[in-house]
Amino acid sequence: MRNLVLFLVLFSSFRLIAQEKITFNATDGLEVTADLYITHPNSSPLIILFHQAGWSRGEYLEIAPKLNELGYNCIAVDQRSGGEINGVLNETNQRALEQEKGTSYVDALVDMISAIDYVKSNYKDAQKIILWGSSYSSSLALKIAGERTDIDAVISFAPGEYFKSLGEPSDYIQQSAQNILVPVFITSMKTEKKNWWSIYEAIPSIGKDYFLPDTEGQHGSRALWEKFPEHENYWKAVTAFLKTI
Figure 1 (cartoon, rainbow, N blue to C red):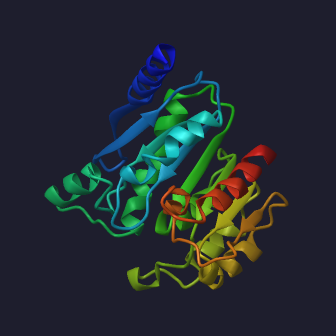
Figure 2 (figure 1 turned 45 degrees about the horizontal axis):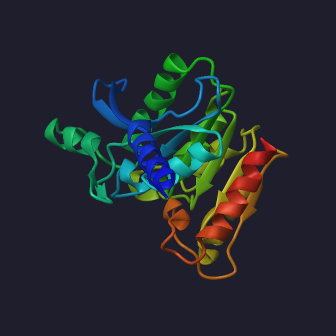
């Protein structure tokens, strides 16, 4: 019993040490906040986690440690288009508002690209760089993957063409998706398939796959939170995809 208690204390301490808050500058000078979950050698594959609308890096408090357990290092990023979730305030969004910078979905693209550049500079030995997005950021992750050649895979939770009201064309994401040549995994609520199916069909990559739950499901990466009944099925699908890459 004593040894078990000691193990649990050490395990809890490890989880706390594994998360480190950092900042880096976006290309327009805005300071971006992110949480590092680095529990493996720097040569291990690394997943960059982007949150959904109105939220923060707190979306991944429960998810990132589980990805660590699967062998991946992670960085969870606050994009300037966001807010608060799970008690974690989006610090990048706060700075953007203070500096009167745009905070729309499209404005967040610079933060995502800058996060990739940060990883490329600081984790040069990483075997693979995987983009992981939730809702609007999952769409932008697909866009980025279609425009860069240094991304190894994309996991996209509930993408869609969310940008027409911001002045972008109705096929803003699909235009870039047709150039994606790396493995892609898309998932969402069952009823959201119509939002991303044309994007999925446009992706020429032979390594693409998707998952839809039998039940209604959840919007975005929160589908993996333990409080939702479908989380195990989502995790099985994500894990199966990760094994292929």
